[in-house]
Image (cartoon, rainbow, N blue to C red):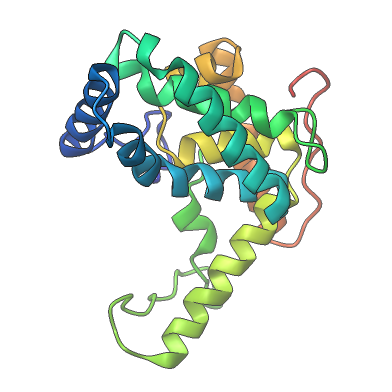
Amino acid sequence: MIPPADSNAAPRRDPAERERDREILAAVQRGDADAFDRFVERFGPMIFSFGLRMCGNREDAEDVLQETLIKVYTRLRTLQDPDALRAWLWRIVANECRMSRRGPRDPGRQVNIEELLAPREEGGAPMELPDPDAPDPEASTIRLQDRERLEEAIRNLPPAYRIILLLRDFEGLTSEEVARVLGISVPNAKVRLHRARLALRKLLLGAEPPRAAKGSG
């Protein structure tokens, strides 16, 4: 889920996904026997993937997943607003990433990830990307290389930039939700996101990214 290059607005979440989240939360709060299993099936892979990108190793990602699920299990029934579920969940995940033993401890124009990954022909014109559905081994290799390059660049971002980029551009949280998750103001969240995207762009272009400002973790 990637926002437009000139906008701070997160992509709108699929209404069906929102309804599914509401149903799972309601089932947990009713005490349905399999409700938490459904929650884990729904959010577990997202939490693990986020932890892996944020912490940089599988052991910490597994710890983040386990500790998050323990906290969620003990607190989820107290959540009153279904629409606050994602921000509430990602705040727990973000805090667990910050406390990871081996992982990080501190938590111009807008540039989107699709644009960053688009290869350029001589003269600066965008090359036409291969059809992602085409059963072409060479195209698959290109996509895999692009994905690996992006993942490596994200791992090399300062933690304060990495976490806001993951929350906003991968998990699709709004600026308001990100601000609540990180405990910062909405304007600060927008500024930090802009800097994070520029830092990612520099990494993907082979330049040294700027350091995150002091106190932005």
